[in-house]
Amino acid sequence: MDLARQALDVTPWRPEEYERARAVLRGVMAESGSPEQAAPEWGRGSSGGPRRRRRTLSGRGKAGVGAGIAAVAAAAAVVLASTSTPPPAPSAQASGRAAASAGSTAKPAGPASKLVTLAAFVEANSGAQPGNASLVIARQVNGGRLMQVVYALYTDNGRLYLGDDKQTLMAEVAGNENQADFTNAREIAAARYAATGNLAAAVKQMVSALPNDYYDSLAERKAIWAKGAAARTVIEKEKGMKTPIVMPTGKLLQQDIDNTLWTASTIVLSWGAGDPQIRVGVLRLLSTLPEVTVVDSTTDGQPTLTITAGPALFGAGSGDQVLTVSAKTGIPVSSVESGGGLPTAVETDQVSRVTVARIEAGKF
Image (cartoon, rainbow, N blue to C red; front, side, top):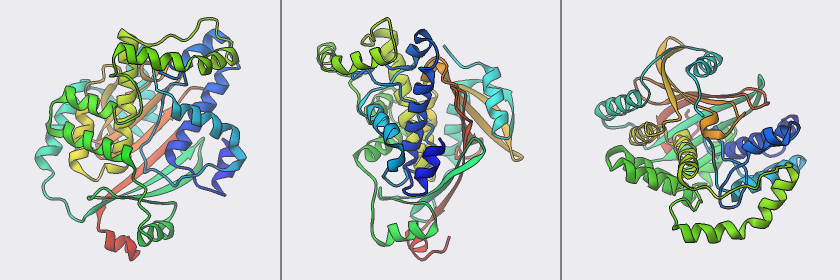
């Protein structure tokens, strides 16, 4: 991570790339243990790559990974090319520990019902929104050290502008440097549909926003799996795995789907949180995940909900990802990733409604 920090001085990472690098490092560190311990860290997706695990409560940062971490970047490319996976469930005790690290106090509460109730409350009380865009300012701290600050502006018409300070964000807007891509659009569409549409259909739509073969026919999935045989053999050999990775079906496939649902949903929430419809949709989608726990909490004197995903979603020994949102608005407050052999990563977020004109003029 020190190499990563040095690379940021040259070229800022996308927050997603930062998280992929953490996931790759976690996998590399797992290799120092026994092969039996390391094996569960790897996914069972169509290409046999690592499990997907992203703590993306942030805007999508600028593209580019510093040359000083070429090895990590190459490994992250494998993550991008792969589909994901998981499998046991985080305990309430683990949730409490992670919530405490985020500076909040928590007490147990009903999981799915809490998210559905909050979604209904946000929907009923959102009303007309000021401005024409949402600004997210995310501070990312790793092991107590500031890694980067991301300024993400998401407009109501689907454009995404990014910077690592006010000046670069202003320049991005002035230059019309839209960084939204087709994946962004699909995630947004899925979240908005989930706010009022059929929830089962919304889950499929959100999962399909990221590349995977989960809803393909068995024959199609087998064909894709066969094409990835060589890549999986390399992974299995490098990690000293005695048992070959198998194509997920049944319960294992459902775990992959749940993992990807968390990933895609938290990505869209990370930079679309200023839109109440997106928040409602994401809350409803997360309520379908049996591996996720929810507790009532208090953060900086304000009521919050602490949502915890752990080894059940990310794989054995992966630690927890804790998302804290306002219990009144559903707006994300912080995200904490702990365990898995890496320093605790904390992201805090400021979300506000703005106008694009005021951002371009530097009035924020």
